[in-house]
Length: 192
Image (cartoon, rainbow, N blue to C red; front, top):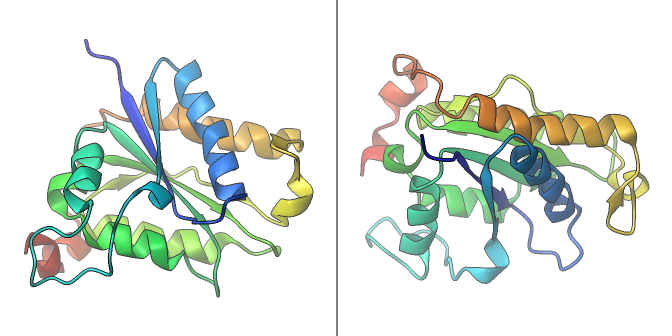
């Protein structure tokens, strides 16, 4: 049996990104569970705002190929105005059922404040519309600047939660697909 491959997508363009740091802990959890891992840093991709009149733009084919080849994907985002980042939204807009259909997806959010959950609920809806299987367990880090000292996640409970997200991505990577969701049946744009 092949080794499970987990990809984490950083939905932040900041040089010192807490999202990127937190996703590395999730990938550490995935590696501890026996997976190979890959951190996808969207700063390294040329992804202009999606124009659906074109099949490929910039590095979109490279991004979709990476996601398509993953057994599980972890989406990480900072919370902006109660939702997930525009850079992650744009990256996801390049994807469809080919990349996410029946794929296990984990969700991680970081926030400067104390309420990062809505961003993950929005991402959960997007993933359901692409017929992905979203892990019930999700990881959120509120007041993120106080949760880290340098690059170290110092809150033991939060670190365990984030590492568990990575482990769960491996454990459930090959879960039997469920029937299509109502959202995915109505999502004609993902078939384009």
